[in-house]
Length: 281
Ligand code: ADP
Ligand code: MG
Image (cartoon, rainbow, N blue to C red; front, side, top):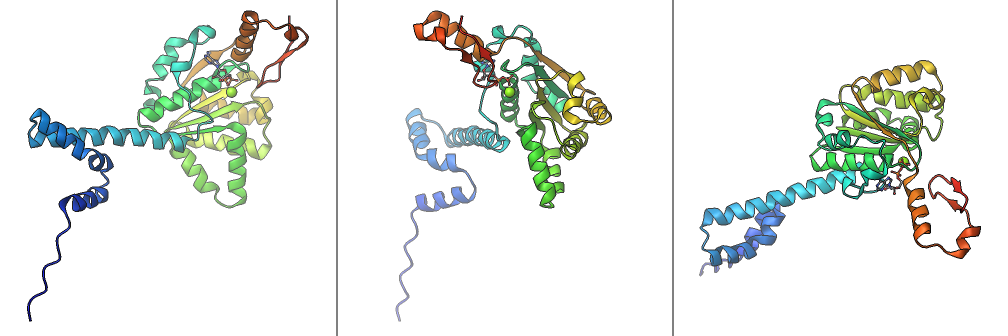
């Protein structure tokens, strides 16, 4: 009997695509034909052709990792220092903020506390520091104080507290926004204290608060707990002071000065975030 004709081999492009997928080199796969055409046109040898593809894959892989870190951080919004107007908040130490944006404090496991009244850019600065950390390869997690406490209580009820605590202890940078807006229950305060305690000298924590330190007892209830917490948090700390007029309020006032409408006279402006009322002048 005549032997069966050999199965026609898959074209090399098909095999290459399969192998590159297995090797997780999506950019290599997407770009190799285009780069091959360029290489032929420019007379590049094989090594330079491969080098160009490897570089493209590395650049893309870095970008994908940054995107993954950003999405894992669960930022309330993605904001950077590119859109932050330092001139609007003279009380803020700009050289210190720019230094922090280089993220050496994350390597040193230092903490950052941003204190100031509402609308002065504390959340914006903490988001921008979080983004900078993602871009430099650090894992980040962003929470409001209320939401992290809520999640800790829920985890405790569902008997997965240890797992959540381990996750919160493991991120290189933990951001706790808006400490002070809501007083915590005793259990909530203790759970949050435990997080700060577990991260002490193991990872950086950024805390933003509308309250000066003297008033933190009103959030945590117990002066003893507050003292112990401040002791840990402020051991290696950079303090940012943001005191001044609410940025949005200032903007809407400036807008109204530029573009006065008669109807505005009767209307009082409310800050969208704080509900603070400024009577129209
Ligand atoms: P806070 O957290 O201190 O209450 P936010 O960071 O939420 O204040 O700021 C309120 C709004 O104003 C946000 O949309 C923020 O992006 C913007 N904002 C505040 N300060 C500045 C600034 N100096 N430059 C640009 N935008 C700012
Ligand atoms: Mg805020």
